[in-house]
Length: 205
Image 1 (cartoon, rainbow, N blue to C red):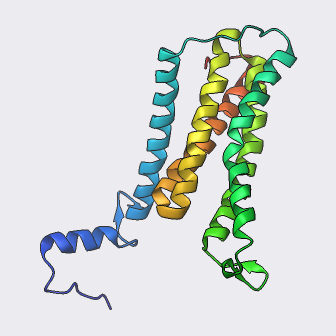
Image 2 (cartoon, rainbow, N blue to C red):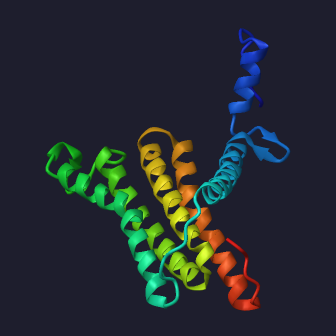
């Protein structure tokens, strides 16, 4: 038996209530699925715009870019900044572990600040592993004029980690957006690398 909507609600309230109902579908997607798609497309557009704008305003090439050591050296330098949010998170969690109010027995209280920060650290190191491999390969295959792409994508990675961390505490949409800024550019890098290594076609970055 289907419930009728309360008669005291205005048409605008009824429309808002219907939109927020997770069962209601628009073009085959629920409103929550549409929200995810909006964040997903926003990730792609923002990341692409960030890369294009940075390359337009920042013209840089490394002084040494001939040996594998030169290229991996740049990636290692960038990695110091990329992993910095995770290192800061570890320092914060170490301090929070001194507070007994953060624990239930031997476990962190679910959804507490300590629990959230611990999950952030784990996710950051997972993302960093994929980031490092992708950027090392990008550096190896990139000509000098595209070396700055590795640095720009590192800045995007750090921005994404910060937004993800803030969103984990404040807003799930912001968390999803921050996650996408670190994950999808890395996926795009892997796609470009696989295309080049299997077909010899290099996608300019």
